[in-house]
Image 1 (cartoon, helix red, strand yellow):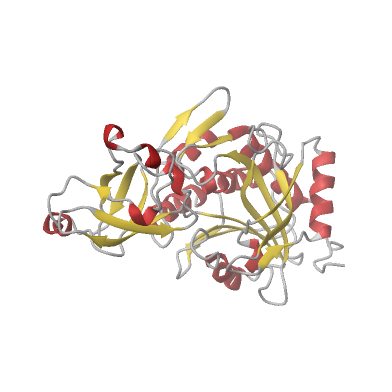
Image 2 (spheres, rainbow, N blue to C red; image 1 turned 45 degrees about the horizontal axis):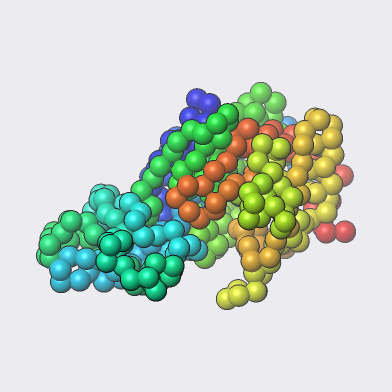
Length: 362
């Protein structure tokens, strides 16, 4: 299968934070023919080992999160309408009029919609107002709470944007959960590239849980793998739209990005500064393979690397990714070529690890 075909399969697979089992099983199935051993840990992280040519070298972990943001049912009204709250960073201004999937307690998915007040009955002062998610109602067509409960939908059930995938011009696609199924597809491509030419060090390819919820699922995978160094694969905010062109420099279709700064001080005080030897390795690999390498730095963003770096005696971490537009909406956009290029760069870096590679920061 091509990367685009794998990405489509993954984007159409529902997997909100805490309920990643369907996605975990699919990623595991793709990795099993390509890796020496693949297993799920207790939290549901997918951990696949690719043995290197020299097991005495530092151990590496390349990972991307499998989960997607969504909602949680908070209350079922007596008339059958459903109140929800956020599960992850939901942009509330895109919500009215969206199609949704609600997961009942038996694991089945049910179609619903965020209703919007009829346009003809909306007063002028409301037409330009953004409604909070807590003021919206999900309509599944039920006439009563009993009908909703009969489907197995109760408070605590997860809800997601209805999965979607469509091809745009060229090699670009749009739909749900590009963040971060693009990284999951990248892991599969990295495994395939390692079959052609193995890494120098032992590499663990990991699909992580809970990133959109609390960023802590990857910590538990790291406690199993015990890596010396790690690459975190995630989206970066593409700067080739008019609203972001003055903020960042990364552009879709011009290759992978290296993340050189992330920080989030609201609610959690954490972030990632690059491990300079890994950054130098990324630049060297890009130069030697005649590959592009973009740079990205931003406030208000965290990745799993923020917590991985604090595990054990400390893990050398570098954020890497691919540009994506309209993140956290149902119409995220990426260029599949960037995902393939990211996989080639990561594989090339792992083939260049040697006994002189420093895992310390200095």
